[in-house]
Image (tube, rainbow, N blue to C red; front, side, top):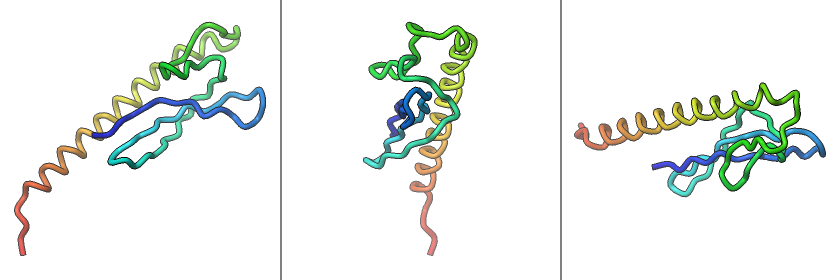
Length: 99
């Protein structure tokens, strides 16, 4: 079973938006899956791994609600893929080995 977390990688350039990425941990191996979503540190809640609407600039008001929808869609895809791969692994492990 894989663990999936949504995280923000802050930009190395001061004042620029960071990139949201997915951290996937499976069998103690950590992988990062980059997304196209960019948010500033003030728009991100590290504790919950979600977007916060406390300090929204006026030009970002229309963009920010679409990001959680996209994240939710991505997480469903990843979970469905993970379930499929786990099913295939069980089927392959259960099939007899032919010489």
